[in-house]
Amino acid sequence: MKGYKNKVTASSFLKWYFSDSDDVKSLGNRALESLLDDGVFNVDARTFFDESNYIPQHICEDADGNNEYDPTEVLLIQD
Image: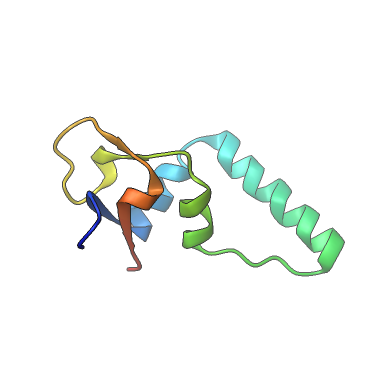
């Protein structure tokens, strides 16, 4: 974990990221556009993690506090 301020599991991140219905709708629109344009839609947790504006501390393994991290400061753990 050297160089990271915290770490988060992919499942915790995705539950938080898609807890807002607007983000779920955005995913659906993104998938539909890709399918119509290219006939395929590929996505993974890393894509959403990297595109996120911040990572809240309360979803991380060290959840004590109210910090917000840049995604580059948090280790994403595939679970």
